[in-house]
Image (cartoon, rainbow, N blue to C red):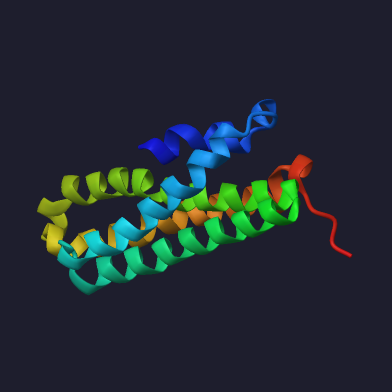
Length: 149
């Protein structure tokens, strides 16, 4: 929760003068990412859920590491873009919840139990967020486009 609360202060330009959000964000993100690996040991959805958590958690940590590298290099625009990717992946868990709700609501029709649909819901939820964030970064928000040379 701490990462999600601090993230807007580190990403949005109106707070760009404050250094404290980034001092908190990167260590909090590392803690979130490392503990997510530990939490996937006992997954309800078995290997399908575990594979989604491992893939998207690795993507989260990769995006966070790229943001850190660009921060160190002084490339604030690229740092923001990679932080947005990290936050988008992290918020995939919030998107997974309504997807699970649909599976729970339709379980009488589909006869699927939580152990059968949790993994699918994780893949759908995280994928939706990744697609939305990547689409927004590439096509939707011209103010954060990077000129490719």
